[in-house]
Image (cartoon, rainbow, N blue to C red; front, side):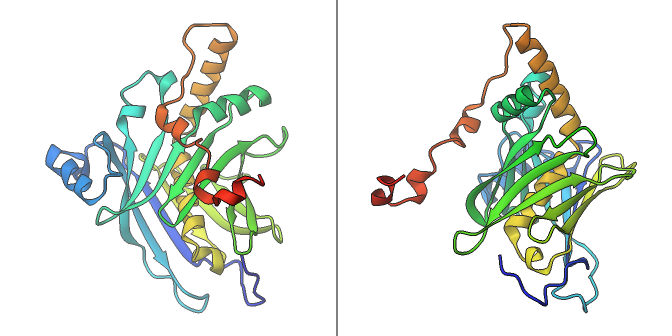
Amino acid sequence: MPDDDKRKVGPIYRVFSQDLHSTRLHGEAIGFRQVEMWRSKSRQFTKDADIIGNIATAQRSNDKEKLPSMEKAGFIIRRHRLWGEVDKLDRRLVVKLFTSSGGWIATMEEMIADEYATSFVSDEPLVSFLVLTRDSEIITWVRQQKRGKLSTENYSFYILGPDNSFEPFRIEGARASLGDDFNVVRLNGNQKVASIDSKFGDIGGEFVVEVKDPVLAENEWFCRILQCFSIMIAYRKEIRDKIKKGIHLWKKGEEKVPKQHRYEISLLANPRKLTLKLDELEDV
């Protein structure tokens, strides 16, 4: 990712609001015909989709412009079959982002096996998920990390740049905040490049992402990761409770243990077959 002397980090260049509904009774989610209409726009809109919220956004090209008012830009679905139609211990969070016209933007999928492995090692429930976006063929891991007893909640991810470069980021819980707020810190320069504001007291939950780096504000991959993360905030307590209960039962030798969904397993397929040439495979 390029470094520019004129890259002024600090002002808000781009904003995304993920406004989650307080109930499931919203027009976009009601009726077979509505489901089929959205499925005709994108097969990513599954038959078990619940529309759980709306997306709004605003952007400016430089810090001298005024940030415009946010406008509706899309909606959010959650796969009900994997979350609402199973026992709590078997829940797996899968949410997807769409444009207002029904075009797929991004998907966040909870990774059950990875959660149990890292939670078992760390002796505390830790959340893990993948993000897939239309802007990149690369899958992004976002993992909760254990940093010490006095640290706030922390997650890590990275994105790729030009010439085999990459940018690591930390999403850390903001101290002394009323809601579930987070800061996004870029390793290069230890800069706070974005923030996530969880509207405290909102019944359904509104999670506002503010990108404060002009280069990253133009990076769709980076922005989609933060949008997905902001939605996960509303579910992470339920996810951690599920992991904690599952590990307890597993340690006791109970018969009921979590299993991977076949779609989760498919995300672990060997990616080198897709990204490397045949002659390169001989060298890895």
